[in-house]
Every structure is written in structure tokens, then in C-alpha cells.
Image 1 (cartoon, rainbow, N blue to C red):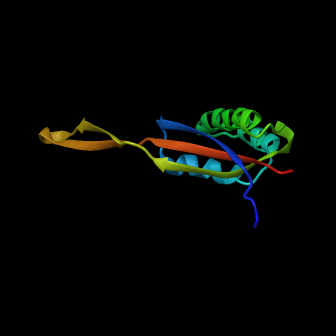
Image 2 (cartoon, one colour; image 1 turned 180 degrees about the vertical axis):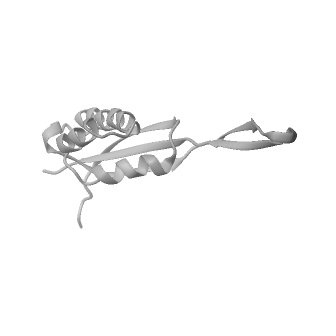
Length: 116
């Protein structure tokens, strides 16, 4: 019977960025070693990369406590962005009309596991 690798995870709720924009960056770091993922996020032009970098570093700290693993032997096993609550606003338009503006949010979760 195989024992599953233990994971450490970190998440952040209600970030003011759309889930699709966050998923674009998360797809770039999925499966990478922790040091390489931090490097990719540090040099990314996307604004959400800074928020994702904080979550990755938090997951690394959680792994140090839970798994007793060094950051050099960690890799990102899973990461995803789910939809959060949508803020609904209205924009005044011509002739007394109003258009709805949907300000979307997301929650980001990153899981890391030890490779050794």
C-alpha cells in the first residue's frame, strides 16, 4: 500500500483580481521547484504575481513547520484559483440608464510537497 506524499498548503481569500488572470500565472508555476517558481513570479509582469508570491512563501513556511522540509527540496504540487464574491457596481449612462459593472474576486490556493 503506497503512502501519499504529505502536502503543506496556503491560501488567500478575496483578492481583487479575476480568476482567469490568476490562473494564467498559476499555470506557469505549477510543478516547478520552489526556488524556480519564486524566480518566475519575481520577474513576472503581471500584478497578481506579487500576491501569488506571498502565498507561495506562506506555503513554504507551512511546509517547514509541518513536513520539516527545506525550501530547496520543495516543489509546487497543486495550485488553483477559485471565484470569490463579485462586487456589483453601477455606471451611469445616457438617458437615465445604468450599466452593471462586475468587479470579480478570487481565492488562491497553493500546495507544496517535498521531493525527497
